[in-house]
Picture (tube, rainbow, N blue to C red):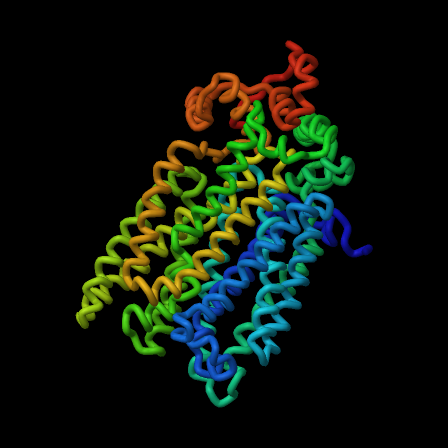
Length: 536
């Protein structure tokens, strides 16, 4: 495919910040599509024309189990797509995986839009989810491997903000089409079909911009990688900094290519500390979901109608403003993630979410007696809960797995972490309407407990990744292993003292079992020492 070159159709025509912004915008459009796809069902599942076409989707039909299945089955598709990326993502490359995922999403959207039976709708949601699962596994890796450390957090959280932008847009489109009844099924078919706009924008951007230079170096395409790296930094391929970065990455790759990655190495407890790193990568994605956000995202309109007692039009209007506030809070996160760091945002976010959920549950327990005042108070704390999530857990948990894992296992680990997101996403979306119908306001106390538990988990097990080259974290984990200490404390000491870490040590760690064989050859006293806080 001639148009699909590694350098992209704009290769060499733009560079520096303009190229980085272009890559960021393309990556973010994928998450705009993701957010829109998540939010669009919130209003559709209660629209009259949709329920006329699919009467099985009535909320009270079998206590909401069928509605929950149709909404949640999308997450199973996402899980399937992310597992495909685990198996084939590193062979395909970052951009090609996104292209394939987007094409699959467009096919799924077409199936959903043309649905006349519940079975067809379910198939369409599974197919759409599979494409999205591939995209959300590959886009963060592509982005993190291109972005320089100083703005990597900002750029990846921009993607998170665009998730909320997509959710917001879907809410307002649903609100507008609530008043469209004269065109029958057009009331719900158009909002579903509209996601194709973002899909075509994503395909266009993927064709324009370059492949990850780290992936290219890993696959022996040094010349092309050098050109892309030079382009990203607005310099020439022979620039000393570019050559030094290539040499450093190649040292890592030289020991990662020697052996096929095995599950034993993937979960090893040696100096690479892969088990720890993969566990927290998967853990943060799972924790994002069991924090309960999709109780609100997918069922916001249902919550406002059934739990809070608002009329249908007001419920959709409130949902639109909820999405707008969600987007605004996510934008705030862009400007604080690289100042406050990943850990602090996750800890503060979880604590704030826990407090809001406890208050929401308490308010709704009194609202059940016919007193509407507590329902209004609960509404305010639903908005505040969304803000804490958007600033602390939305984009951070997509950024963190790609940062904390070594290049040897990064694609596979990111695929598994995304899979854990979809698995727990499915569980929450499937169980939420059933729980609302059975235990009512107590559902919020269940999610309060999860969020309260997240605070000590992040504090004890999640080291800060902000400001480091991706390769530098390998040396931090190696030093923690050598000293028998928690990597969280190692990272804090290194950051505080500005300690130097050995580039050869990074290569040894990244290589896992293969590097152990070369341990003796890696201890040459003449190895260059580099500062941890270097930037690409």
